[in-house]
Length: 102
Image (cartoon, rainbow, N blue to C red):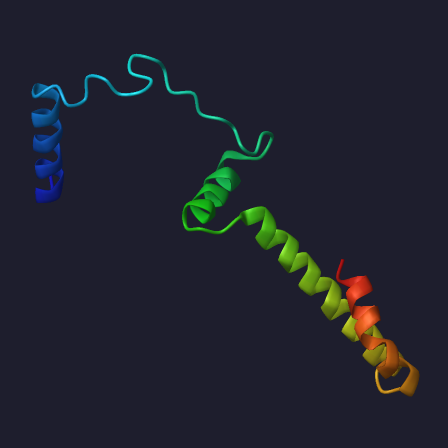
């Protein structure tokens, strides 16, 4: 065991002995864990939970990736059709990108 583990255990035991943990909210009741992502494989849930614990919302990250992918596809299409340099496209470029990024 690590020294930190031993110190933590000692502090918890002392708190229990002194009655500091007697009147905690929900004491004696089972802990109910809400399944945030039902139907998702356990391995994927674990990865999502790790991202969430690190301060990232995995669903927002996926949405952002999808939006970036749409923008890249639009860029590729415009380059392929050689319309990116036309005068009319330059006038409406911002509106077009806003429309496709939603």
